[in-house]
Length: 63
View (tube, rainbow, N blue to C red):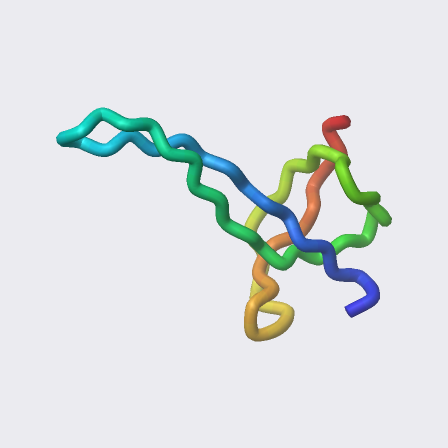
């Protein structure tokens, strides 16, 4: 998996009854042709399936 990066997406979710805010996170396997490093912020988009779990591609590096 030389050209694969793991991108973690954090979202804030509020419970409908108790109104407590909880941070949820999800990891995506993305195709990386740009050679991003750990800690960089990226934008990624959907593409055709490359493997069983890889259906995303890095579009640009934001930071």
